Length: 469
Image (cartoon, rainbow, N blue to C red):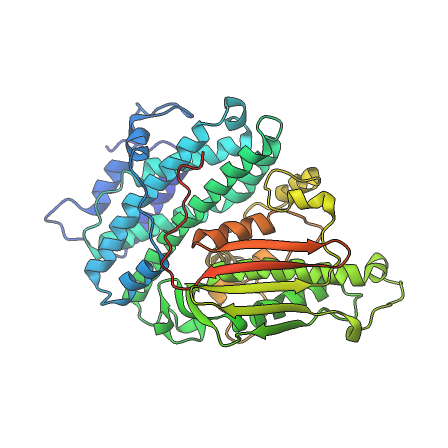
């Protein structure tokens, strides 16, 4: 009789996923099956190291450097003769890279003072990371497409389970402010978020390439030519189209949140409006969504204070007098530069030092309460699409071409009073991830200019910041 697997969330999910796939797939019997090998590999031995202690296996993976990639490499690998060998090469890259990147983050957490790592939220993240690391490092070499389908099921389950990481990390960092300087906590949070994005990028790219290989019409629902996509990389991102699409959605959200206002600011586009470039569309949509939300809401609040204060208040600002939010697009030789300009009253001097910080804020108690109301938060818009399909919640369509797989609903449709304080610092993490930048200039009493610079050629490697701590 085989030994009974102990209760272990990640491993139980993996075994359940394998069981589902096994019912649909017949694996050749001459050699030990991937299923059988992986079950043996995932069996927990009684010699597991205690939590929050270094182990030999962890040391081995921490000694390995991560192998960062660039957008150009993602495009080149997935667009030239995508065949079974390339899919299996991709699977084994992900299989070896995920535990390596997770191991570095576990070690970063182990460097924190004991009083910090025992915070219930950070301890939860640590345990989840260690379980994922221990699971992934035991997965054997992926040799066949049947093996790859099983591997993809495990990866999908792991991605879904880790959707709770961001709010738990944020709450842990906020509750640890009395034990570490805000700068140290910011660096820690920044490093973990970069690594988390990196893991999801390579995992989702492999899942997408597998879906494309097995079903060439995989991207047909995006209302674009399937050849425009290589995995999750969109080859011809239209800067002006993204701004119009996301902007229309944000405007509708602000109108729903503030029903007494007569209008929302117009989004005025200027510059090189025909600019296109390769990028992961969900990353750009997230950044632009956060920046437009800040600008539009600041303008509305600044120019409709009396209206927002009371539903019975007289409206003193007409739509004609509402200043627009202007977005300038500059197509430079090596970069695409966006400038978001608003007349939303600027940012008070007392709040400027907190803008880019995860840990510093004069609203920390309010932020903690807000995070407690959010059980999950997603790092990419692809994840949001999956959750919405399961929950039955569908976002309004600003344009026909809005992708169901990448709905903006979960990240943008939230009440303005639910202040998370992560929009700007998290947008900067996304911008810098592919070698870009995000900065701003503000004039208190007048308005704000925000500058987003995106790498145009896709040559920059992922900015993993492995040795940040």
